[in-house]
Image (cartoon, rainbow, N blue to C red; front, top):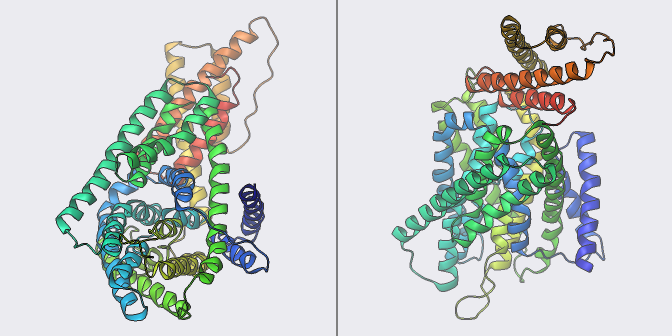
Length: 522
């Protein structure tokens, strides 16, 4: 009962803080972590201990799925080379650098230092997506940062398993075995994710019940995660693949009503889970500090040094990449490097990995250094979320990479006019063929003409004759047909790089709203 009360209090606290963050235009994750820290320092606040399985199974799948669905597959195809370099090379380099520094600055043994390096080596997709959601970054830069955080899981997970094996059993590293395990985790997770996406697509294509569609959408990430983990592959990779595949084809599987409902439900779920999980990070740090053994008082300086090394190494790694691959044409490479570097925060996944470190070694003794690894991991996560999170928006604005609101508005307006013209052309073809009544064609044409004039459509008054009901049905059918055609044109404009992914999503949302306003269902 106490656990339920704690969760409810967290939900209320997170909702209030996140609402304030939106009003004050402060990144919600940063403010939630600070709020959690303050609450944990209040005398009498009960100690909070969250099982790693709870975070990994309950929280991560829907958040990863939502983040993967938002990613532009078109832009991913363009930036996959730097993403691969960052997801593989930078993770390995970061783990090695953190491990060496931890051996030099902390009392951790070499195996436990490597565990710490593996935990902190990868950026966090939940934090990156939450911080970047309100930033007006160019599509390719956003995709590059987001894709790196989504796909570096397999690398860091293999390193983590190898390091934990060394720490627990003092075993010798078999690098060929570790390489095979990497391909099993990444490849197996990808295959299970693709298979799950295929099955879900078949089911959703044959489902028209909004409630059932919503349940399927909520269960999909959990199903992919559980299936992959049960097969001893990467559950995170499986969820990411499902999200990317269904995010690309989801608009073909459902109608406007269901898409709008799914978007509303998932927005609530993501808001609640993100809010609670970032508050938990702040709440847990003081509890972990109290569990530290004597002689660990230098942990704040050690955590600061580790965070500085991670950021510095990221700068050295990203800068050459930004010179070779320019995600934004005409932008100075150092500006791109600065934004990509500063956007690489740590968050929920490193904390979940650190919490999953075994308590005991194989000989039954307590695993030395585990409390310090937990504290250093949480402290680095808090540092990146607060310092980088609060300063990321000003950095993006000063870099000149931020998309101006008027530029986005102009692109969206131009796209609206183009899809309206595509609809008018289709109506002209129907009129020439005599395939529909002139009155129905006129009403649809009037609506599209009004959009081209940037004014609200005004339908002419009609006499309520006996044929009005049938004319209305023809009008609605024609309007739906034109909306489908406009959606196809919108997708073509996106695929041919005429519009951004943000514009595509916004205009598809507008078309869905218009279609859902037509009575009569699908």
